[in-house]
Image 1 (cartoon, rainbow, N blue to C red):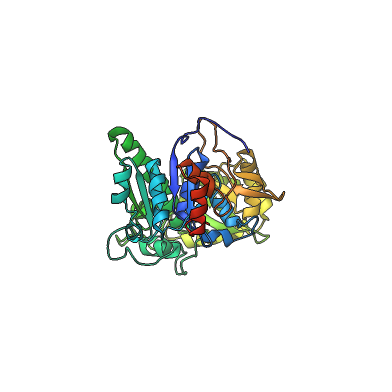
Image 2 (image 1 turned 90 degrees about the vertical axis):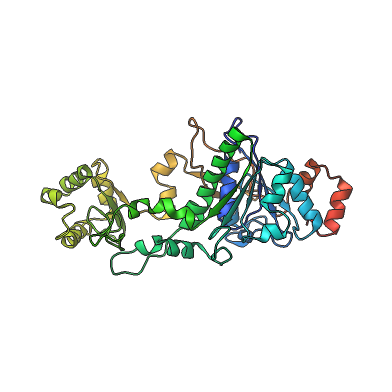
Length: 396
C-alpha cells in the first residue's frame, strides 16, 4: 500500500457513526484523501454490510468497498461509558457524521447542541432520508423511495413504460454520500473564516434537487414539467438513445449537439437525417430507422466504426467489461487490492486527482473492533481500564 504525504485532508479527524451506504462512503472518501477516520460500530454485529457479499476475515465484499482507510471502534452507545468515550473523541475531532433517525442522537445525549459545548468547532453532519424536521422526518425509507418522491424515478422510463429500477443507489450516493462531502467541506471552509462549527442537515430527498436541474428547465408542450420519455435525455429523440446491436448487445448514442449528430449521420451514410434531429413529427420513425441500422452489426463492429467519428457513440458495457476497458486501465479507475489471505480483488478507485495525485490506500477495511485498544489508549485509557470496559460490555 502506498503512503502519500501532504494529502488534501491530512490532519483532519473524522468520527464516523454511520453504517450501510451513504455515511460510510462519505467518510471513506474523506479517508481516501488523507483524513483520519474512526468508524464507530455497535458491539453486537457491527455494520450490517460486513455480512453482504464475499466474506474474508470478517469483512464482506460490500463492507470492503466502503470502509478502507478507517479504524474500527466497537462501542456500546447505550452505556454511559460508551457515550463518554464519544465525547472524549469529539473533543479532538473536526467532523462527526451520523446517520440515525432524527432524534436518536438527542436521546443518547449526543445531539449537536450537546457536542458543540465540548468542541465549538465541530462539523456535525446528519444524513437522513427526509431531514431533521417536518412530518416525514421519522418516516422509514430507502433509495427507491427517495427517488420516487422527488419525481426523478418517474422520469426514468420510456413513454408509456413503467419507471426503470435504477441499477445504482442514486439518492444514497449522489444526494447522500457526495452531497454530505460537499456540505462538510462548505462547513469546514466557513469554520476557517469564522471559527465556528456547524450542523449539516443532509436529507437524501432534498439532496437530489441539483439532479433535477435539466428536467426542471425544460417544460413540455403543454407547459407542465417533463413527462417520462418526452425529454431530450429520456428517449424522445433518435440522437440520444440506446440501441440493440446484431449480437444482442447495446450502443449508447449521445449526439445531442448538431455537430455530433451530423458526424453520426455521415458515419452511417444517412446525411438526409441531419436536419431532422429534433423533428417531433417523425421522431418515432427516425428512432425506428436508427434502430434498424444498429441491428445490422455486432457491438464490436460499431465500436470500430465510431472509434474516430467524434459522434458521442459508445458501447454499453457490463461491469466486468468496464473495469477492464482501456479507459479504466489507463486512468486507474479500479484498485487491485491484495487481502491477507492472498485474494486479489478490485475496489472502486479514487474519483479525484489533486495536481495529478489520487487518493491513497493506507488501511484495509478493518475487522470489527480491530482498533479498540489503540484508539482508547490515544485518548488516555489504561490497559486496566480497557479491560474493565470490555468486561462491562462497553467495547467488544
